[in-house]
Image (cartoon, rainbow, N blue to C red):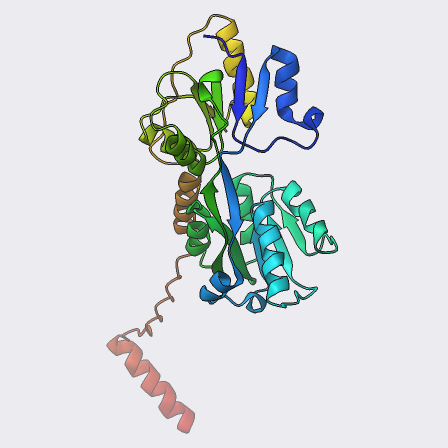
Length: 311
């Protein structure tokens, strides 16, 4: 069954021509629509204060989304907190880092970003072990990043700045689509809340191990998954999937590894740390004094020499 119409569970891009999905539209002559399945609501100032986190006790902040950036600076404004110029910011992607320009002067010396992968972000943070980090999160969130920071024994505090709630899907008819694309486990929850048993058509594409695991756990069949070594992005995965179907190839459902790649990375780093841990060298044992036993003739000669010397 070919793919002609796709629904992506994300807001529509501001400029359609710059979206990676636009290339799919042109290449395969398909129809791609966008509709968010979830929305993030910022916590209130009272909810923030109930977490007993002091922002100014930290020297660096970790951001993994634009939403947490917006809510971080909103809370600071409401609480009348002035962020010092020396505060450092660590972001998972360059796009998230550039978004900081909305609130601060962008300076390379205090803004650091990774390439979007979990391992790159962890390795970037590990280079700044002397900082005290504030990890900004939304609820629910993946546990891997807090776990990695704990494993590295870094000083950090978590703060929840937004919560995920289901969006209104009353105007969505999933039967109109051949493929639904999801980016988070919360979107799977929203799908099942609005459509309790969407069995059969449409097929499902998921981004991330956690999203795929949530779908499979609910008895759904996942047809497309990213990222993988072969397809690092969702659009690349969909492109390959459509190409295989158009070529008459039968594509089996996605099978999941028991452990997520992020957890596997954390464990590999822990094992590496154990292997490279220096072993204290043992102090060399003190050398015993060496005595030589003289023969009787040697003793007599030594005594005679002493008598002659006295004379």
